[in-house]
View (cartoon, rainbow, N blue to C red):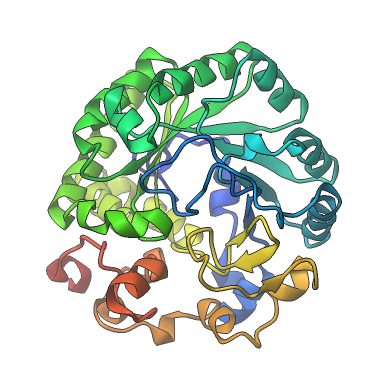
Length: 392
């Protein structure tokens, strides 16, 4: 996750202390550093969803899986995570608001000392639900919009989803809940990007995360509809420029990009050209952020309790929390992938091995490399930096 507002505009965001507090240089080796990290955990709490998004990495359906963690098992998971000192628990899905006990579990996680956030399509948030989210102690609500009006509705598979999600933003604001917009960039919605950015101002939405497409779940079928490398650069330029415009206008709107760590070096090049006096500061922040953190600073637990390197890597499981605690699973290096992700740099090859920005992106997304090349250590095909840029 790249905080454009922090790096380009020197505007500190509410969660920058989590994003930049980790320092690999404090430890004698990368492996020891990553073993010491406590990951942010994405819990895909249910397989059920009321929409059918064409890019859903979780391939959610309309019904709950009867094998999903029970309330008692979910509370035990929360105890595990709290004992392991996990700082943030993100409730996702499917649609997490379709779990009958989501508010009870959210409150329990807060009582156990974790910051909780919820990732939702927003269409189920009426005044009553917004009030329950707030009372359960969720500190942030991420609401997905993947275009304006009909664009979003086609993407989400349900007519009226755009207006319902927009109403969800209004209900969150009415009860004092901090909310933000989430959008996954692709050929279906990139033309709506200027309007989406305008919507942030018009609707007083204080945060937006722009995700790059990851080829997982139904998103695998969208691979041909991903942006080209040049289209990605243009879209990122639009996001960068609008973030700086918001800052110049004095608007408190936080802009982030997610799931393509080439955005960090690309932003650094812009700083070098336009704000050379801040180059070393931004370089240090990107190094502290560390780039892709699958298997290190980010973890996923699915609705059945299986533990994954991240939420997109559903095809590899390290273990199940019904049988072992999360902490035992997460620090067990007997799984070759777990051990490799915690010290991946010597395994990367091709452009990644040659790249002068490797410390900033950490090899980018391994799931995309695996999907395209069949090789988890091959270059990420979504890296849009040129050969000349990475070898200068």
